[in-house]
Every structure is written in C-alpha cells, then in structure tokens.
Image (cartoon, rainbow, N blue to C red; front, side):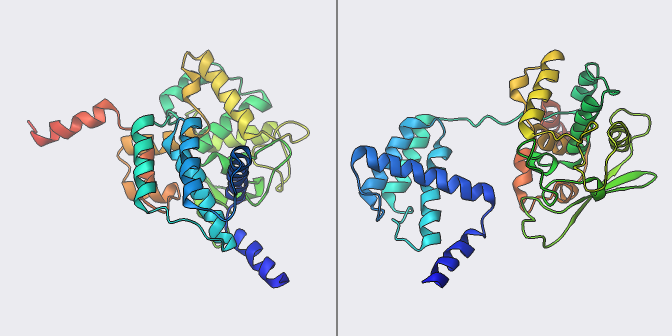
Length: 316
C-alpha cells in the first residue's frame, strides 16, 4: 500500500510545480461546484461533467480557460488511475466548439518591447541608482536572451532558487560577449543539460548587455552565489510582479499604454526584433530554447513586414 502511494507521488513529480498547483486549484473548483449543486464528485460521470463545463462557460471569458479546467481534471484522474469520461466524444467536442463560438474570445497577448521603446524609456532611468540600473539590466538581458521571465526573476522577494534563476556565478565575461549558463527552463526541468546563451556586445550603445550587466554588478557588488539581479548593500531581490509594476510605470512615463505590456514582452519582443532584422528562424528557435515551432506564435509582423509579401510577388 505504501509503494502504491509512493508511485502516485512519483507520477506527480513528473509535473512542474506550477502545473501541480494548477491541478489542485482546478480540482477544488470542481469539488465546490459538486458541493453547491449536491452532485457526487467521484467517480467522474459524463452527466456531471457536461453541466460543469456549462457552468465554467458562464464564469470564464476564455474558451481555453474552460478547457484547461476540464482537461486538468482529466490529468488528475490519470495520475491517480481514476476513471474519467472520454473527452473526445461528440457531446464534449461539440460543447467545447459551441462555447468557443458563443464567447468569441480573442486572447490578449503582451505587446513586444523593442530597441525603439527602450531608447524612449532610457530618458526616465537613472542608471547611477543601483535599483534602476539593475532593472535596466533585467530588461536588456531578458530582451536579448528571449528569456522567460521565470528564468530571470523569482516569484517573490524571498523565494530565490539558484537552480531556476541565474546567479552571478552563471555568467562568463569575454572581450566581445557575455555567456549566460541557464540550468533550468520550461524545456530543462530535470537538469539533463545546460543552456549556454551568448550575448554579443553592442559597442557604444546603452543597449549593450555587457555594459548594462557590469554597471549593475559594480553598483551592487556581491558573491557568486547571489542572484544575478540582486541589488543594494543587502542584495535585495526583485520579484516578477515588482518588475512588471516597474516596467509599466516607466512605460506610462514615456507615453505608452502600459497595460499592454508585461514581463513576457521581453521574450516576445526579442524574438520579434530578431526576425525583423533577418535572423534565420532556426537561430531564433535555438537561442530562445523553443522545443517546437511554438516560437512562431511569439512573432509579431509589422505592416512593413507583411507588405513585402506582395511586393516580392511582382518585383520591379
């Protein structure tokens, strides 16, 4: 019996922490629904699942959110070896399709940052201040790395994980580049490899990653085990939510619609800018550590980019 329980716990270890937390949230929502309407939560039955899906459709604006909650229950059932209805049956597929048509939801994607935006933001930075110099370093390195914000900053000011986020010992400095050693990403969760991301210097530019990083480190000296973006005499940490608030504040000061941007704007912006500069798609994929063709959804094509389609069809 103990071994069976250990087997279940081992299966759960295959999931990322955030995924496990989502499953707990999704299961609690289903239990509360069943409790409120007097339904039996287990075993999962088609009739209850159909009305639960309809209930979710009343609560969410996004059809994908409805699917996420239902497929979360399916994943939980599989991990526990519980019986679960077949979601590929027509009553479910047509219900999901109908919800998509009714809700007509267009996902809101974070707008990409760009060098043009950075130069406007720079007017509102004091790069001699340790905190602002560190924030600038996060922005520049994150943009050039096509980084997920989770690889740069922790969840909170006290939750730094040296395996998941960069330390100062994870940086190699050369004459014409810096190289960052990333130990964990969405595609590297078991320490099976390390991702080396080289960033070339940009001479005489405020967007130079080497200059930005060395400036912030000089203003906030620390040891190799400290978080790469810790700042001040006490090596204070910057959380992801704090960074987003700071970024949006600077964007507002510069006259942008700040709510359209988030920490994800770094990854999306870097990939979009690289594509606009003619960087081959394969290099963008490798540099950003995309395991599939999903990186294409990160790219935002300007009207000038799209205008090339017909101009190239009939070259003068």
